[in-house]
Image 1: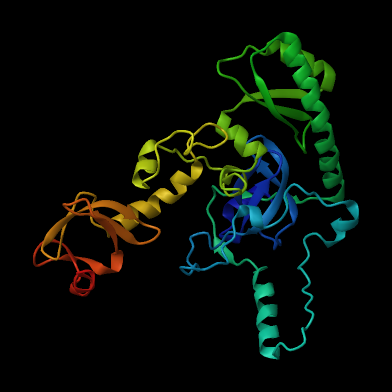
Image 2: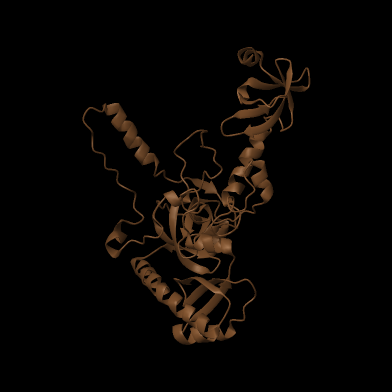
Length: 357
């Protein structure tokens, strides 16, 4: 499809694609049907590059999500983006997956059919949706030669990192090289680095051009971008959210930690990159919304003729901690507390008071 046809197209298939070279995730459109794991060529902010289709994005608004569902998958669960297929596997790329199901003795046929249907639903065929002129379009499906060249570039990137670090040390530059990436569709290599101040790397570029004989670009990134590109294990034991879930680095503030009643110790609420945990931003909206249905800390509750003060709100356990006039403290289930419109105050249910007393 040429550019004029794309501008006039009213409907297309929408996909979520991930660029392994820069770890960017973007939404792209196409007039063809692609399946998760298909390698395509897409326009990126650095130029045409290899990407992998993670799945259809026509339901990204979450309209089909059911609360409590355990079938939600993030961007890192679609396919192993770091494992590029070999030439023997290229023939099967872009083709609908074949489902193999082995019956198990003692399992009813109805249960077997349900399991088979669940497997097929995991590879749901995308549907045509309306698009505008601002959406990115997938250029084409990656050819065997392009994937072979991409594999070769991945090997050359390791050597490029070693060479660049030697040049940095020779010029005594105060910068840390993060990664190198060879572009797929043009003779250009990108070097990503971090530095506390501005760096004059003009002489370094000259040396790199003499070695690689192609266009050189050095791009300074922040420490959070470094973690996003390289990945790693977070304090929760899972991969970095910025690396495998989303490449959009949302702003994180200390107010978010306060809203979630977390310790303000910077060591406990900071990630390996030294910045505040990204998950504070992801969970902040949930805590802010849930707290609207809870009494504020400091609220007075009358229980058995005594006044108790709310000193703790636990959103996850759905309990409210209170303390009494003589230092006694206990927790009340959220279901036992309600706001009385008649008395214009928070009250505890009579059933709980009778049981408590």
